[in-house]
Length: 318
Image (cartoon, rainbow, N blue to C red):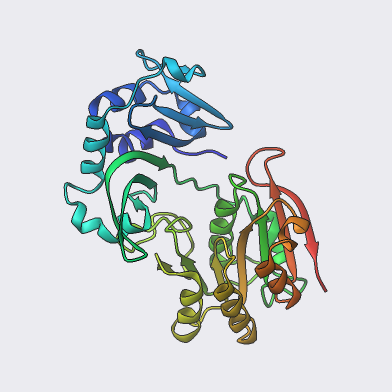
């Protein structure tokens, strides 16, 4: 799955890094930039890059190396300057994002945060003394979900079918959900366009920055950004007249209740869930309950057999 080319990396990602890290990353070649998935900064540890399926570091000359202990070691100053750039020198303005553990930057890229967690009672209030950062590169792969449209839109194409995307981590489920939203919202000669609502609890599907989607999710798509899934589904039903609701990583009891509300209202739900296969999914009580309701009629199982987004199997329930 292609990611950012070098020019986009220079424009959208590199300005946030401290100068020593930025200088090293400037040496990345075009092919490495296209396959780049993550950039990890851990205080006192080597700079790490996830390029395709492998971890690399950068040596003093900016060359990729699999010997991670030969890489540039991240210092406190690197972390401090990067956090300052991400927050525009105003951590207070990003208090809610920090409480959730990540900040989304322009372009839809997400920066995961780790450090000392500050509690208020039993709830996370904020985070301080940051020790590591994880830049996750937002990746658009248009038409990667095109082959799923005949299944999801059914034989007549008049309505979409409730669909569960089953996938282990890093198998492309979020990318496929994003492209499904785009394809459904645009429509085609074969399938009419839908009104789509994305409930984007973790700001990953649409990559919203200051409320505006940074990634192409289609002209008939509304996004509830940073909104809890169950609440967002009910909000969408009440106020946005969706034909399809798309959300990522269901798994709580309240998600089951909200999905049943959507199905009863005649609104299709397309969502993902972490699991390697149906048998593994059935071992989780909440998901077993959800499947027993027969709310979902279609399951798409992903793997990395031929890279992220590989469709391992499609299962229909009549």
